[in-house]
Structures are given as C-alpha cells and as structure tokens.
Length: 443
Ligand code: IMP
Image 1 (cartoon, rainbow, N blue to C red):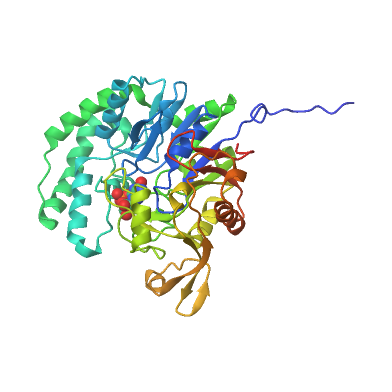
Image 2 (image 1 turned 180 degrees about the horizontal axis):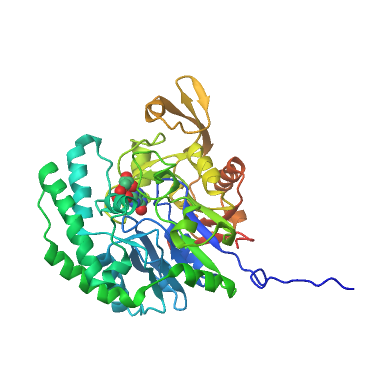
C-alpha cells in the first residue's frame, strides 16, 4: 500500500520572514534598507526600543522621519505593527499618525496595530531619565532623554503601564496613583526635581488611550495568522547590536535587546518562524552618546565623514561621533545575530578619502585580540590595529551594479564580505530608494 503522505500547510508556499538589525551603534541606515525590503513583504513589525530611534527616509525627494511607526507605512498596502517589546510614548505615536494623515497617507487600524502588551512611556519616565543623567554629570550615558530606560525598568519591576491599561480607566488610575507615590518621592527627595500630579496625567493618558484604542490588539496572533496564510513578515530592529543591554558596551547601551533574537520575544513569535537575518553595516562607524569607540576619528577625516554623511542624530539632532569601520564590532554582530546577509550603507560617503582604514583587531596591552573585552577597564587599554586600503574619488551614487564600482570600492566591499564570511545583499550608494545596488538572491 502507498504510504500516506502528510502535508503541513504551514510549510507550503513559504515566503521568507526577515529580521533587519543594526550591526554597530545604531544609525546604520536601517530605515532605507527596511524600506527596500518592505516592497517584498506584507507586514512590518517593530520589536524593541522606542522613540529613541529615528528613521529618516527620502522618497521621491520628500523627507520623512519616523520614531515609532515602521517606515513601511509609506507603502499603501502594507500592515505595520508595533510589538510588545517596544516602549511607546503615546504622544509621539499619535503625532506620527496625525502627521501621516496630514501628508495624505491614511493610517487606519487596517494599516497599523499596537500590541496590547507594549509598555507605555509615562511623564515620570522622562523626568527620571533626565534627572539621572543630570546627577551622573560627566559619567552620564548620553541617553536620548525619552524615558526609555526607566520605562523598561518598570516593565521588569512589574509596575509598568501597558497599552491595554490605557483603555481601562480604573486600572490606569490605580497604577498611576501607586506609581506616582514612589516616583514623586524619588524625583523630589533624591533628585530635587518637580513632583508630577496624578490628575492631569490621568486625563491626558485616558484621552490618548481612547484615540489609540482602535489600534490596540494582540499582534502575536495577527502575525501568526499572517504567516500561516503565506504572508511575508519583516521584523525591523531599532538601535544597533553594540547598544544591546546584554551584549553591548554596558553600561553605555540602551535598555532593550536590538539583537535579532529579540524579534521573537518582542513580537510574540517562535524562532522557527524566522528565515533570514540581514545586518546593516554602515561603511564607516558612528556613535551618539557616551561610551567606548576605539576607531573614533577626532581629526579632519572624522569631520569630513560627519559633514559629508550629515551625521546628526534623527531624534536628538546631536552630532554623531565618526570613525573607521571596525571588524571586531561587525564580527561580534555576525555571531550575536546569526546574520545571513549584509546591507552596506553610505558607501558613497567614503569617496574622496585617499587612504581608508579598517580595524582588524585590537592591541590590548601588547596582546592582539579579535573580540571586544567585556571589561571596560580592559577595553580602555586596547588600541585598534588597522589595515590600510586605497580610497577612490569617483561619485558612485549613480552606480547600480557592483561591477561598475571603482576597483578600490569593490575591494573595500570584498574585504567586508571576506572578513565577515557573510554575503552582501544590498549596497546603498545614496539616500534615495533608487540609489542602491541590489545583489541577486537578496530574499
Ligand atoms: P536611551 O536609549 O535613550 O536610553 O540611550 C542610551 C544610549 O543609546 C545613548 O548613547 C543613546 O545615544 C543611544 N541610542 C538610543 N537610541 C539610539 C538610536 O536609535 N541610534 C543611535 N543611538 C541610540
């Protein structure tokens, strides 16, 4: 008798579900790559971070900046979801929804969902973030001041306010009164800051809850249903691997996990649902805020990159620190994220620099090491070991094929591919959607 063959409908017609992560300290240009990949997806999901992130996108010459809503919202038929792993400032979210509506892009609940379980950034989180940084003085982290850390602290302390609570007046009032007792004590007695009153906050957040209610849902179920019906999902990470609370340059990190594994916990799906992980590598390195940055350039070349690359934070407007590409950093990210492909961004910015350098290891007090030490004391003893490469002068923003790049630009890319062992998927040569080299087999 013929054996009975069982087919699993979940496996049939399977499309790739992709996670996009930053491999450095954020601001790698994820927004543009996510925008390109969105064309091939049905759903786009944010899974961590908050409005500390900022994506700048240029579409048909028009600039858009997003802090919470995935940039996929600019495509008419894509669904965007804000995961339970995100901390949400409802003021910012509503502002983004209104801004998009004003620009003629309708953001109905068919286009946007917010997880019931996402934690809400409250005014006391922002007040505590700013007060802590002030008290730390020169030892400050250089946070974005958006209340991200204090909000995640409350989540872990099990005192946080979740999106669903905004729709239940009694729950919100009870939590707010309890929380403010403790927060106001801290704010006034320890930090010498102003106390926050319950009533105006309650009124404002209930009102925002009403506005957001149509969007608030269980996104884990929504994603599961979408994948089961053969839809393709893009998971969009914020910040970068080296700002990861576990794996980054602690304590100079953010308070979430920007690594790819966090797409599972931050969206409510299992790891078997993920197929590809694309790491975004800026062709040089930048960092905002304090913390170790071994390949930082405090010279003319650093200024050239900062100015030409318009390296200002999309959220705070702060000047980004700039430096050479660091393979110790990138190779850590290959491992921590299980990268299957790389997207190189801002390659065009390096044109005009005669000699380029890439860091291939650290000299740590005489010992050559290939991994970043966990101890900041030991890291402070490290010096970057560079390999020098020839630069190129040509403007490459019009190039659409790898083979049309100047030889030295190709050599630079080959060095990245060879050193990381991860194939290139995309090379970005300018801010516009079309200013990209798309490499076959990308998805
Ligand atoms: P927080 O996330 O506001 O607590 O800031 C902690 C650190 O992460 C600071 O050094 C910030 O500058 C940095 N940071 C947070 N979000 C981003 C981002 O989206 N891009 C780059 N750096 C970020």
